[in-house]
Length: 398
Image 1 (cartoon, rainbow, N blue to C red):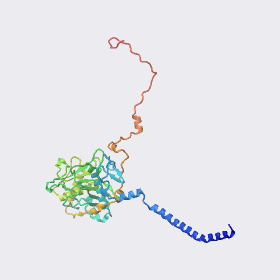
Image 2: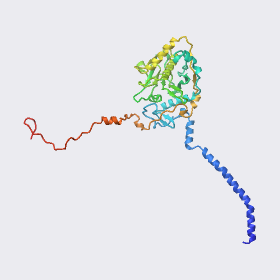
Image 3: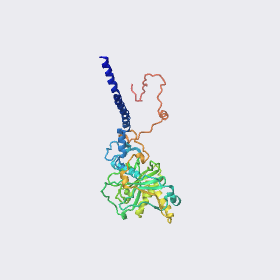
Image 4: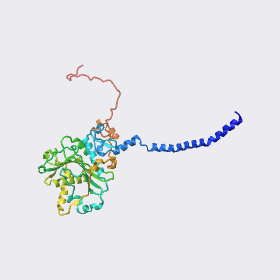
């Protein structure tokens, strides 16, 4: 190539260089912007696990594990916390027990709010110690149901009334005439496994309505306040099959308590309030316990409160703060269980088929060694046995 041609080529190349540099700069600049955007998109993109968690949190409480398989549920739970926990929510062995738990938690969420101030209980502490006075409480409706909601008994304690209808929507109940009822009965549900889970007991009561009310053990909500749930599954005057020794003639409540356990004071309060509400609607009812010691501690608490309130017959009735559970809020309650109640213990990792078998307590090593019999010791050399000499008349033969 001649020199003049090289010179012309070089001049043309140098003339194109600025445009090429601009194009390269534009590409690099676009890449510099696109790269952070791509990283940001990956960072904010929900993973499959997060999406699943969000979907579970969005599901309503009342729909949890309804229609699900019960294969993973605890068939023979050994305590209140011995329930299988699937996706952070207890799985009960029957759909009826599941619905009862779901309804109670939905009511708990729907009534959540600020607790009443101590000022709201000044009349209680001054004129009605231990609620032993005339009280203004929610009233039984004509349909036989107590309004669902929270009855506050102190700034840090309340009784939750929850509904979990046994029959499907649209199905009626066979109800007694008011004048035909005679008793309100305190029961206790317990067994050898010490399982007093209220919802699992609802699972075990199939067929006809056993009792219209169940009363659980004291627990703590997510804000650290103590509560007891009274679960109503049917109208208070429904035909039920409990207390056959009393002709099953009137409403009753199953209280979560083992015979060997002391009854919780808040449970006592809940039972007293429930009996008072029912007896206010049907004054001629006799409040009794089932038989023997069953239900006796709560009956004694009710009678103590009744005697004290009669001594203050002229006092003004005290109104306890009550938060009504709106049906719409109960139906739409959603979130995680830990948002409404302190986390319950998960089921121990043992096979479902073995849940009814309580393993024996381990024996301490020292005790086991001392209890073991000592081994025989050799005190001489091993020799052949010698047959003893025979004697006449001794039965031996030569």
